[in-house]
Image (cartoon, rainbow, N blue to C red):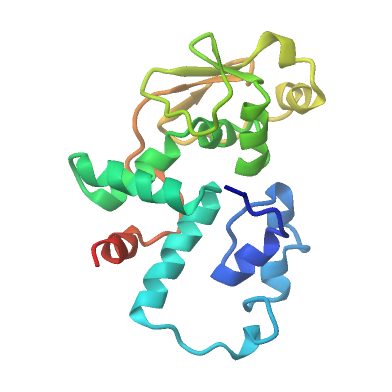
Length: 207
């Protein structure tokens, strides 16, 4: 199964909002959403109002692209969220947030989720002292993720240790060395800073 390797700025433009897929570029003047706030393609500026189904689909695609996962993976996560107690939409966001690649990104050890996914896949991180190289690895409360000893001399991590500490979501804590962090709890909905209407995704899958 292939992964999208095209220009990610097209994905942001297609969804009509910033998905923050390119790190610092998304916050600057070069962001394509700010310069061309319409969908890509020949007919991008002539698109008509979407249907109810189209609105639900776009919300699902937006969330899927934020976390960089395939359709089959997303459907599996939705199934997991639906079987858990609580509100399905909120469960879905919590499951996605607990992926190790997302947590590495949230801790400020990578500029984007895509970069975090690559760093994890290359074996630069350990969870509770054991090497983890699967980006979809689901972390749990009280788990600790850290940069492995042999990777700490890489420029990517040296810059982190020497730079300013990033702001942390309430459900995570950053180690003093800034190269490790701990999951304090499963994030609540108000702790996930995403402009997502998850109830639309639930409605889409309920059809």
